Length: 400
Ligand code: SF4
Image (cartoon, rainbow, N blue to C red; front, side):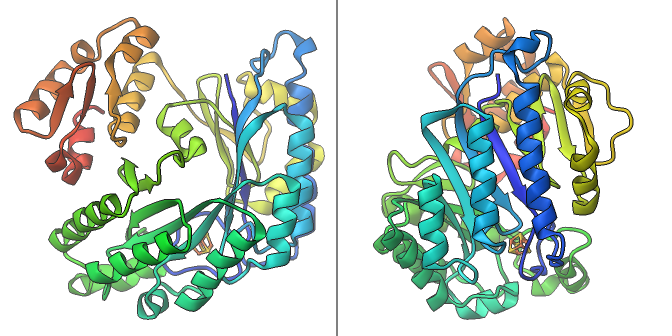
């Protein structure tokens, strides 16, 4: 039963050279996009009408989270963004204590926009800081400097938000562990409650891939990257941020409920060009094409949308099915998603859902990784050890 909504806002002020998320810098269709996204929220509202009885979305429950990601949702006109949230709130039943997040960037967020976001119902901000070192920010091609980022955190707090998350990128050429520690300390003293730390990845098709793949010696060595990962994690923990997933740490009580829903294999709705969802065993998406999205939302009927969600995938330009998950696929997903979390795999929960013991289904992978010291069993949980965290990708590969 889906209780989460992801909304993709595909606009950015400029494309960062390392980024492979779907976003566009041509804003000429911004208004048309938000009209289309409001239409999609309304379409979903009619599709989930409980009187239809036969659709896969009946018995819809209160939504626990709404997440406006991107792109950069703070770049478009805030009236467009808040109108879309209003439409989402009218279309779905939103739980009174729902977590409603918006991603913003220091270069585009203003006090006025923040006040509008708060009044519209957003209660959590995710700020794309990436670094507080001006040289690192230049290497990353970001539009803000460190002062702009710290000012943005202060503005967010002053606007009345208490649930504030910030992103950091580790493994950038020229970055040091001492610098990352300074950034974390600044976050802590300025009231940031949640920190996501992502290793810089060389994604094919990005300018960074072309630049660093040809001169790999300029790029950070895997050993140094791992050293920074551990040093960062230790410092986060010493500073009061508990690591609860490979890339995410927070003060007590500030885990991201929305992101946790992904690691718990929960279903979720998707709205917007480039957005991906998971409903009725189907992973689906909207193609990375904002104009095709607008055209589709202008022509699709509730019946067509419902038919798509029920498995009829023909004749659509933007909506597409990525894969139908079998029972075995879902078991593998539990393994690779839950192994990323420090809570690990809850063996009783797995047995309750699938009627089988995790250790029987994945017998070889479990034995192999426990014998290598990469996986540990504590009572009724299985999780990665410290060395396992280093080799998480290798361990997870064994379960796929
Ligand atoms: S601001 Fe974010 S989404 Fe936009 S290009 Fe940069 S990294 Fe990608």
